[in-house]
Image (cartoon, rainbow, N blue to C red; front, side, top):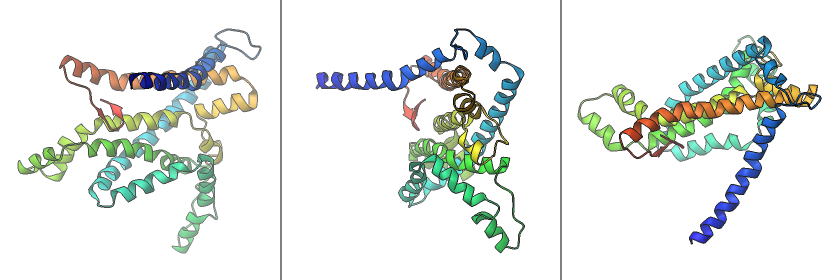
Length: 281
């Protein structure tokens, strides 16, 4: 049995090395090459110029906005889904859209949000003026939130689901109302799922480019748009790789910042570190 485990473990490690480690390593190497394939730091020096720093600031602001709105919508949604008797059906309906290709969903939204699209036709039927959704920030936010919100709901749902029912009943017996239970029990014990959801939504939000192209009409330029531009238009792969490398480093830093203090505290208390909501506490 142990030999079989080792055999399959080798296949797993090979998969990780070939399809995760090596591509990341190639990106890091490419980030130090200029357009003449000379090894230098010009790409990183360019990134820390005013243009790219402003782009980075804008990307962070939009990513924070998307993450915050997703969190505000996802927490009550996850809680309500858990309390309904149709939670399995609702979870399936939540997951199903993620099986559809992102490009197809983006094109579908172009039809929905167009000046004479489905949404504006409803507004006209209600004797309201049509609204310009396409090529605007509000259209970009609507589509981005729709794309990312399932990835915020699921880890929060898993965290809330794993809260012992006895704690809630004990709080009720002690006279706690629903708001007190949510504030003192549900939210603190679901922080791990919230943290996981924030990580899953925030980092991809920094690098989205398809939605900025098709929905925002380049009204919004993010780091993802810059990466696409360098790889597919300007041919400056080194600069695109440098931006990608910084995003990868940001991903690992965010994971470390969120996870390390909690783990350190639990180790000092000699407490086992369980897994809740799709990520370690």
